[in-house]
Image 1: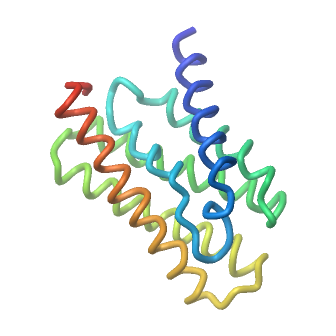
Image 2: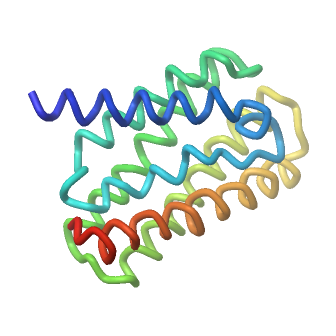
Length: 160
């Protein structure tokens, strides 16, 4: 039961953030603030239910995407892969190095999947523009905001 509740709360939060911040959540230069949540599975408290919630939340949010079904499918796949990385790394270590490594790998996954499949192949953007646009936004949302959120939960609230 708790798995479903955690998944639903995270899915709703992710979808709400993307919807409320839609003008900066799509297109070539995007800062998807909701992607800060992608590091939550790093913490045991959130774990696999959060992976599922982030995947479903992305699918729901991407219904609004100007790129249609391709963004629903590949955006959700990017979230699934990225959040699984955070979950796997968090199971091995709760060190700052592991958190930084998880955030960098997540940025690379999101940048490649969204930049290549959604923005380049479907959106027709030059590959470099697509990659740079997603990369910069992902660094802000995942590395800066997401890492800060996880560190606050770990250090401030003692959530592991």
